[in-house]
Amino acid sequence: MTRVILALVAALVLFSTLTLAQTRARYGIVLYDPPAGWARQEKEDFHLLTSPDKSVVLIFLPSKPLNGTLDQAADEILSESKARPEYREEAGRTGGPHTASGGRWLTFTFSYADANRPGQYLYNWVVLVAGGGRYATLSTVATSSSAFNTHAPTLSRLVDRISLTTTIQVEAGIPPLTRYMLDETEDFLEWLMQVPFTDAQKATIDEEIRGSWKKNDRKEIDGVGEVLKARQKLAALKPAERDVVRQSALDDAIKQWRTEKDSPSAKTMIEIYETAHKPIAPGNPPLTRQNVDAFAEFLCFAAGQTAGINYTPPAEIRDKLAAAVAEKYASIAPAQRALIARMPLIWASLRVLWPEISDAEKKKYVDAWKRDPHLVELGKQFAATETAQTTSTAQTASTSRTGSPTSIAELQAKMREQQATYTTMSNIMRMQYETSSAIIGNFTGGWTYQPRWR
Image (cartoon, rainbow, N blue to C red; front, top):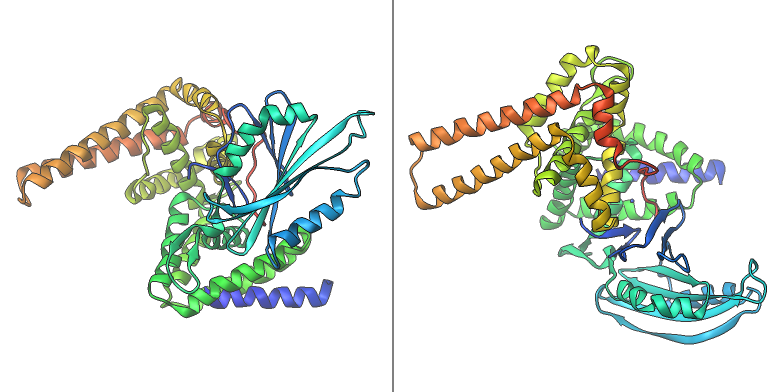
């Protein structure tokens, strides 16, 4: 992977010469608990939470490197803010350790004339939270001081409980491996290959990177550091400019990965690339393994929600599904083929959406999934599998016998369970478009997935 990263850096330099992104919600490096009833909206350069009465908006701005002190970062914001009409300081600067993140925080409040309401003012509470070499800015804008005071307890709780991915250590080392470094590397690779990864692929990449830290593999550790530097350069480019760099870097990356036959990380990257791009069945659009795996993970999530459990499809089922869908792909209706092709984006969108919506909203989606008999049946199969596994574990703990009739029976039962799960999932994937679209359409409106840059 290291050589690939260096190739990207070289491509960035060349481009500059020629022309010059769980259970908590997340924006950039910030992990937070969304307040109940607040509406969420994500734009390319910021993230909004709006109070139920629409009198307060909380704006998450892109994180930045902390090149100086947090006070210096605040000075820059204040300098711009003082240019607002009828600027008034409402509360002076305060700060200190931020317990939940392990970093530091700083806050101040000011008001200014509201151009849309003559004689009225907007009240702006700014909070900076820093840790791990970066800082995040949260800017709360209220239509009046009383509106701010009404929602202040909710806002304070949110700020107090914020975590930063830059301070969440997952492996010791020099430097320590943080959640931020893992996320940035995965986001970079998703952008490079132009495909959102499945949960299984993310887990594999996490394991590879964490393994480098455990072995103190300096080459790979330094390579992750180069990713972080390259990401900063990429974030400063326009989308069209990034695409020029991406295509050049991807071509070099694929060539390099194919030459590193003894590198586990290079092998992983080639497998993911081919899963996402190499057709396993011809058609318009052609079928890829990535499409099938994303559909399978989505179905397991939705069906699991109907039964109140989490279920991850084992490799055997994913392999059989890919083969079955590929075999029947030519007979699948065009609209259904197009839906299957969209599944990586749909599943990635759901993973982003789910932690950030209220329990009441989640219940609406789960209730809709419960109205689909295919998903309910799948959920029952998952629940039966979970019960059987629990029983098997208890029996294994109480006996050391191997190859016994009981063990053989358990193996046969497991094979029957997997066959039933495979059959149900395969049938759903080959359904008429209207049926499977209804399952997916319960949550997708207005949500899109894109790599994070800050």
